[in-house]
Image (cartoon, rainbow, N blue to C red; front, side):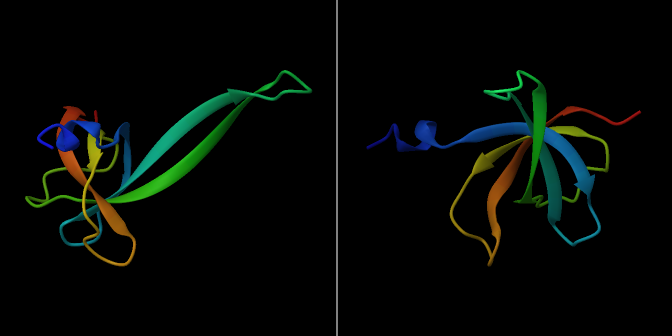
Length: 86
């Protein structure tokens, strides 16, 4: 049972909003080739993540990990800031 923490999902994305207290919105881009037209299509999904120290800013590249539900639509937490915004 000690390996269950390692099985949690992890994502890398860009912070698009930090206006809420202890919450950031992270946009994750998923690129996929259309099966018929062969064009690369970009799908963007937004996740709300818990940022305990309010350290992430808009434009930062961050890593988030799945956690228990913290609110109605927040079940991710900030793991690390990979790259600060310029």
